[in-house]
Image (cartoon, rainbow, N blue to C red; front, side):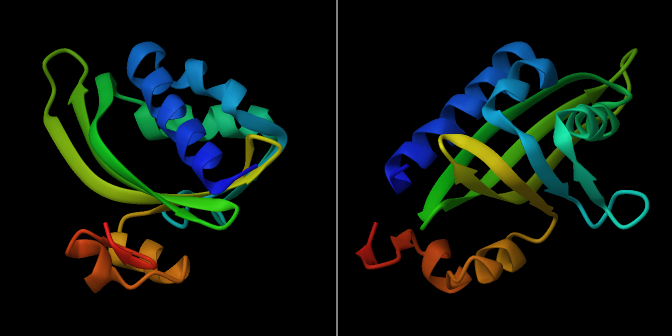
Length: 145
């Protein structure tokens, strides 16, 4: 798939999440997907759609509402870096949380085969080979945005 197709797929994934929650995004992931979140229990590595569903459930547990307010998707070869601004509201009038984090997703045949979550946006950009200072100024690899 082309980098622009991967960006489009990522945008559709976010729209599906906003409209239908965690269950609505499962179709965007390959059966053999690997998820890595260093902030999750154990070694933070999960494999397959069943474990992906468990990760999503853990990430969203205790929230009555969760959606991505805005995001930016940057293509990097067969991957994308998604810089997100997520809003969550706890169950029963619980606390409101806003989170600015990042995700890298690697694609194969139009499906996500590897998803890495980051709390530190600069770390995600650096891991993908992008200069956080350039992205922060609205510039893209190869020239101005």
